[in-house]
Image (tube, rainbow, N blue to C red; front, side):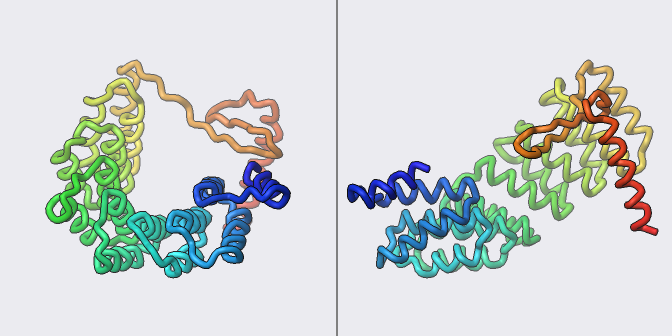
Length: 300
């Protein structure tokens, strides 16, 4: 809205947006995933400027990437004459986040050939790319090279990416070893992510150790009990499910019921598990019955 007002002022009084203004407007479009307004700004730049400032060019790449238009982002990146570290990082992160893991790795190799040194952000993009593409061994090699080759100390974001990557691949014991050897051995989010992976792959052995660590770090939360109970259930160990629930009850911690929130015509509606006091509960139940019947007919 403010940028639109500035365009009107430009036509009336000759007030022109500078590079900082353009980069800020493009960043706003990226956060809102507003491809329509982002394209309009880009089109205006194509018409009025021969060469793009590197900061504005990076903002255009980021805008297209956040809007899911990777081909456009890559096109702008290729046409950018003075690429800097941010340019390469933006492209690598964009490719990694959208599942183009091999392309992200290729971009990283091209970046090194161009003589640009990577930083911590580069490796977050690389590890994310390797995780989504299943390039586990390559991702491990990049993680290990951070300190050994590039003198970059892995931060918690890098470890989180590594645990996610190993967890997706079912290499849970390796992930556990890396967590225990890191400075972030007491981070709840990291251990919680690992426990979720244990549930996904039904690894009760590692899952029990991870759950015990979580309960040791934060006994006042219900999530480790719930995740452990779900892990036992996925493996058919109903005695374990009962034990986890008994421990949860004995701890005095109350589990918040799950809920969903949807927005219809600007009005938010909250639905809580086990709640039958909703004002339109009869209509909801009737609709669910109809959906169940349709589902059964579809399967028949």
